[in-house]
Length: 465
Image (cartoon, rainbow, N blue to C red; front, side):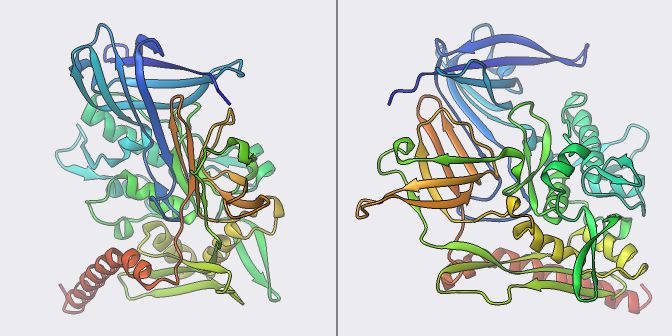
């Protein structure tokens, strides 16, 4: 089956006088030699929460009227259209990070808005000191309880930490680049929350008479100077802290480039089905097991020696047919703030956090339940795909006589212009010892260093230092 595809890349340069982007030129397939991009919400080969990964785009093309210096830093809006589509489909908004030229041909590499989250500090013109992101947030919202994303209380809508973090990051970016309002946050409005379900840890859960129930009280997270973490943290780290509490990920929406909180298996993007006729020959691999959740943990250790730990665990894991993962949230300044101002002071249980995480994976609403089965395949189809979207694969291996149906979610999308789309869901068999060691070695080093620093700090405090 031959699928006709067209491409359009709009190239913009920033106008510092008008504080806006001006269209310089529009490239089409007549000047584009090759193009492709990749989006992902988990590291390659893994399934994780709190992923904050920039989408990438690369192309080789003739770009008339621009020098290499002008191409670097340019904004690209990429669109694709199959022959059967009446309208252009947005593939993403990107900023050029690297450009080289040989003759008339430019080789361009670009990242979307998530790539801007690595900026580390800014120098406020009103002060001489350079502030880090944690210090800026803590100074402005000291000991104020705020929801993760947009939230409501008593019928009133409020902005969430992710919105305020985006505003803060824009200030950082402007101080380094001179560009105003680089990033935009797309919050969950009330209609979306009510139609497709709230994000994880939007509400407090309480156990009454042995039964968990969602209360009307919003889960408010605090950030203070004491738990805003080190000056080395950049905005990306704080987006990760918040998205792991929401059991989701951060990504830039292809349709408009705005940052958004992504969720796995949520009904907002629906589900997609892929059949044998759409899968490229010899490109499909499907694991013969699913990945399930063994337990969820939330751990808090504060400087004043207050500590607490809560968890929810699988009652009867079946290791003969499934692989199991443990999800642990710790050293998270927003979780620490929640415990400090909610658990230790107001008497709430920390167990509401891991319980919400468990429901995010195994929702009582059957419409939001999803399977995690590692797979990879290249698809030639006019269908469009979204990160975290539920997918049903109908596939027959060479030695099989009939096709089987497999359910999973999409954690990576790699598109090639006129070359199909590679879809995948990462994950590992946790029963293999080598995988366990490889995935935990870096975490062990970081945790050991952090624990030593905390022990030293407590010793100094006891000595009156």
